[in-house]
Every structure is written in structure tokens, then in C-alpha cells.
Image 1 (spheres, rainbow, N blue to C red):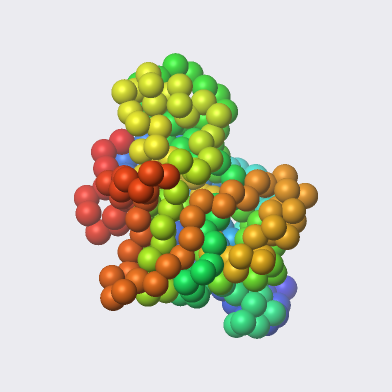
Image 2 (image 1 turned 120 degrees about the vertical axis):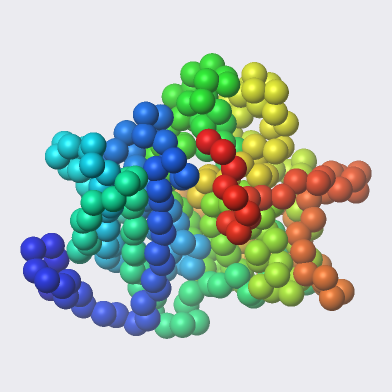
Length: 306
């Protein structure tokens, strides 16, 4: 086994590899000044690890490549790596390699390799079936609310700011949900409304989400009021919460909730899967049946301003 210090990493393979790459750019995915270089390193690794969590895989190695702007000094470079290393230690991940280059903006590209016993042990987006229940881990809206705080649109709330700057990928929950029989899973990076749509499209299904059941993070309602925003918008479209949205057979919901509760992670039932009738989609509805016209962020549209 060889890590940093050689021309290439040597790792011991086991089962199947689950690989994800994530890129974050200053001015697009975060803003230095609101975030420190250390925060940027943490966030970049968290984003890639969250994809591995959504597949139900065990995390293994990470490879961090950084484009450094001319003004970033040596301490800033070390801070980026300190942030990534801090999360790696917490998650049992080895940063096994990477690269450095100079460029106009701080850019972090992270490749993470996870491991699973077999292809059947991982969970994709395409397995949701009519009759399944839709659930979500943790709470929603915290990252979007934390960003609003950093932008000065709401009073300081350190808990929400931490959820934005230092998200924690739901790795243990992802493995537990895979073991519990989840039929489809995705991490919530582009907002629940948009990511539910990705599952619906991949599964050729209709995901009906109960807008009134979404678990708001503490403090989100207060930030929404101060920023003149709908708290439901922060929860369903804000993105970057890095929770997990999953489909589960009805009989698996209760046992999965008990298992995740033992891990300290709540699992909330928020909807159901229905036949798509030729139009796969996700619909956010109030309990009276009223449709809620909120969608998540689309990576193919210009990114929302920060």
C-alpha cells in the first residue's frame, strides 16, 4: 500500500469500486471570505463522499487536486489540505494522492473511491417502484439558511453556518439504508425537489412528496422570515444539505427508522412512489392536494448567484 509521496497510489481492492468526482470553484460553489480555505477543503471532500454515501458504499480513498490562485500563500494551501484531512479522519478515509497547479481561482477536484462487496450491494437511482415509500435522512434547509446568514440576510446562527461550511456526508446512514433494502437513493445536493426528480426520471416513476412532512432544521424558519423567504423553499430547493433521499418498500421503513435512530440520524417518511403513466417526475404537494411549484437547482442552468 502506497499513498502520498510516490508517483501513484497503490491500494488494495475488495469487491467493486464505487467512484465519484466532485469539483468546487471559488465564486461558484463557495466564496472565500465567507468560507476559509480550510472550509473549502472540507466542503469539497464532503461533496464527493456524499455521492458514495448515496450508493450505500464503504468509503476508502480520496484524491484531491487543487488549482491555486496566485494570491493564495503557503498557509492557505496547507489550510485547504487541513480541512480535507479533518473530514477524512472523521470518515475513515485515506487521502491517497492528488495534484497542485496554478490558475485564476481556487478550484478543488476530489475523486473518492468507495467499496462494496458486489454490484448488487450498491443502490442506484433507478430502482424505485410504485408502492415504495419515500424518506429523507436528517433535516433540511440548514445549508441554504446558513448561506443566507453568511450573506448578511439574517441574524447569526452558528449551527446553520456550520451546516453550510462543514457538511457531514451520511455514510453510515447510506450503508444502513442499503442493508435495509432501499430500492433507490440519492444525496441532496441540488435541493430535494430537483433530486427527487432525478430519482423519478431514472426509475421511470412518479414521486409524490408531502411538502408538509419535510423536516425543517432548527432555525430555518427564523432565517426564512428574516430573509423574506419561504422556509419550504429553503428546505426543498436550497440544496447542499447532503442528506439522503431514498425509496424503501413499506415493510422496510420501520426497521430502517429504528436502525438510523440508533446511529443518531432521524429518517422521515415524506411521500410515496406511484406509476409515472409515461411522465416520470416528482411532485411536491400540500396535504390538501395543492401542488407546490418549487424545483431544485439544475446544473445545466447558470448557477444561482451567491
